[in-house]
Amino acid sequence: MSNKEKSSVVSGFYKLPVKERIEFVKKFSNLTDEEAKLFSQSLNIDIADRMIENVLGNFELPLGIAVNFLINGKDYLIPMTIEESSVVAAASNSAKIARINGGFKTESTDPLMIGQIQILHIKDVASAAQDIINKKKEILKIANDQDKVLVKFGGGAKDLEVRILDSPIGKMIVTHLIVDVRDAMGANAVNTMCEALAPILEEITGGKVRLKILSNLADKRLVKATAVFDKEKIGGEHIVDAFLESYNLAAIDPYRAATHNKGIMNGIDALIVATGNDFRAIEAGAHAYAAKSGQYTSLSHYYKDKNGNLVGELELPVAIGIVGGAGNIHPKAKLCKKILGIKTAKELAEVVVSLGLAQNFAAVFALSTVGIQKGHMSLHAKNIAVMAGATGEEIDKVADKMVKEGKIKLDRAEEILKEIR
Ligand code: NAD
Image (tube, rainbow, N blue to C red):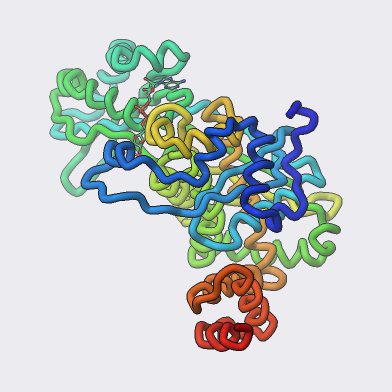
């Protein structure tokens, strides 16, 4: 397929049989027959056994595709691995609305991670801190000697920041090593450097190094996505106002902000998992960043533009890689990266944040209008129908009837199943 023909807009994708959906993705992303077969294959047990300890088997999660995404002028099909219904459909819907005004636009910083080295039992912390700064060149060289490959790709340790912290056990110095990790998530790379710096930092300060590890508050590795959601498409300016009323609670109240941000992570985690990245790292970074002002708040921001349209912005740290980690080992994670057609970790991070914004818009929009239960319930009804023993066409028949009746319960599903059989 040439670039011009590549559109991620597919109407009724959800109605297609699985086989035809795979055919569409295969064509869009130039997958080989072998790659397309991977969708129905489980992870090889030998690979699983090398990934973690005490392996017994695999735990499967559904892999879906979000459609309609236009990000920085490029079309994307986005693989999502998640157990929760409605998430993939909601993201696809938001992406369709965002396309009207040009889709998602992003900006990002360099992929800078922070490594922390904690130094205790120092006699004079102020002069020791200055001594560290004076030896910066030597310290950065030792760090960079640990990862020649990273340096070859233009990355490596770039800077040092020295913090003096007071604690119940006395004063300590925390040295931050700033490392450009290029296309890696960077945890191993940064941790190796931090450990290698312990002896020289003890020598310089006369203190004792304790912790040497990366910080998941990766606030020097930020990505921001913006989109304009068309007021007419979402039902008029009064819906924009209703949306902003809902959003404002998340901006001022941690109880609402936690749920608001959970909705963002519905999308983000699904893509992080699909690409074999570390979702705990992303979660930790996102929530710590949401509390950076001292009060936990919404990661996204919304306002009305001069035309009355709704503008959404989402910014968070995104520590993900396309090299290293499980993403280079797991065949489906490699496949998902090919589906996305991403070339760099930065590009993947920009897709991640755009997806988070799409997810957030969908949730707040639904909450501001019909509520989220309507969307949730139709898929939930199908699950209940299956639990009642429905198979094949029976599933939709039982689910549809329960949704119409507004009674989605196991006993009702069993009754309907009896009636139609
Ligand atoms: P890694 O060490 O497997 O791979 C990164 C290395 O790949 C680099 O150090 C570099 O030598 C090489 N490389 C080759 N081409 C590159 C390119 N274009 N750009 C950058 N590097 C390139 O992986 P990592 O990213 O350092 O670590 C990720 C893993 O660490 C994840 O599995 C994560 O779960 C785990 N981890 C996380 C934490 C945490 O988040 N706190 C702590 C420890 C480990």
